[in-house]
Length: 82
Image (cartoon, rainbow, N blue to C red; front, side, top):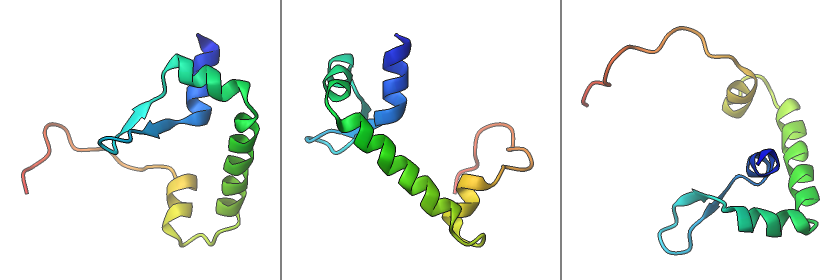
């Protein structure tokens, strides 16, 4: 159970062919992906992306989102209609 939870974190979601919506991977799909060498490729690509973000300038939006910490509080209740 813990292993599937970790694999879901590594592989993320999958897009459906029919509707194009994202969905979580089923356990059988996770077992297929983890048995192949795809897991090493996924981890390498994510660490490469993290290194790319770390070298970015501080003013870019991606850097602010990944490194920054949220401040303040969210408003209570239902959002207002626009």
